[in-house]
Image 1 (tube, helix red, strand yellow):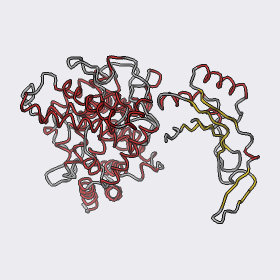
Image 2 (cartoon, one colour):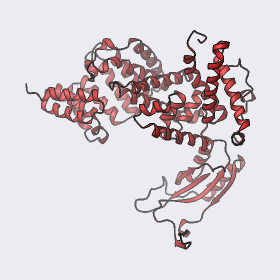
Image 3 (cartoon, each protein chain N blue to C red):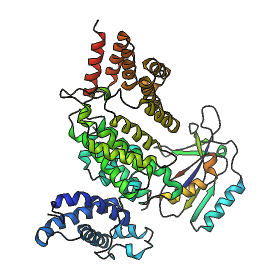
Image 4 (cartoon, one colour):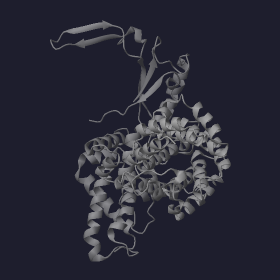
Length: 114
Length: 415
């Protein structure tokens, strides 16, 4: 799974290598490449992290609902790609080609097998 | 006894590493590879005294190990499912179990090295896994060599192995566009093993000195597998030319001896000859790389009859070149020392003082010791004693502490 991470702007935050966000066209082209290579399984793009809502359930089973992303986090998840590739090197190659890698970073994680 | 008359154990040391690499590359599972390697060796210990050592011991072992691996996979359904998900080997001749005993057995240790030194692993895991699986040291030996508790080392290895398996780090030599960087990591790991052991010479700690031999052995394997790669040749040359001085580095009382004062008659001439030959070979490639330049510097030291007679002009030029390739504070320090010999102690001291603000140098004894030495040559004894004292406080090994304290003592004595 490729987790496409973006950096939050602000004081003391990590800054992306370039300030310009990747365009939708770049992501579309990437998506198409994944499809043509036959490695694409699933993907999703998340809306603005400012529209996030948090839910926690405490020991008494009560819900705690708060507005916004976790205040301390310097990065946010912008989207994901699930790809089917034989090994880590192949996954890293695809991660490096992801437009998100130029503006934030892409975390490569194996899906756990049960 | 083996085919050339060597005992079975000696055959095993070399074959064990190749066997493990072969099985790891085939099955993509280090645990399985390790278990069936051990089983195959055990089978050999039982069979060979009766039937004699086979003409191709490795082929015999490989066939036996593969058979045992396939047995295990058949017995263990989980393992079978797991391995079935691995991408199929395109070449049917390389499929486990289908290889005739007389075939040429490929040396897969290169693949194993690249897997163990994959950038997805941290440096501790890289060095640990390389020593465990490529060099074939036991977990206890590695723990002792790195001065950590065996449980800590075992955990480090387990975590590294887990990462290789779970994130499917491939047992493969990277393609040409990636090889440059990835080979750099392998060389870095081997050199780190070397320096870890070399820094400990004089500890009278044989296990730690063993790291030096292991690093050279790993570089030899790498050199055999990549004979045309100048960085590999350069690294092997550098280690041979440095280790050649081992017998003279510490005196009979366990005190370190500086390069200047070493009894050069104790240096290992056959290692110097081999190292010089390899360094020359590595330097014919252009552009030069930092390993061959360092090897060339070591060769110039090794061929000089005394410190004074060293070709300091050439050494200095090589340090200029090295600094252009790797502009690190340590290289700048060594360059300043070369300048102190080439242009004189005052010029050397000026260059050393210019590095005074480097935090990485201020924390280690080398910079302070070099300053002490240069100040002493300039006749500034009090300042020299002070610098040597600071160096002795920062030094790590007993041999170095003893040497630096003695120097501090010498220059603080009036007259």
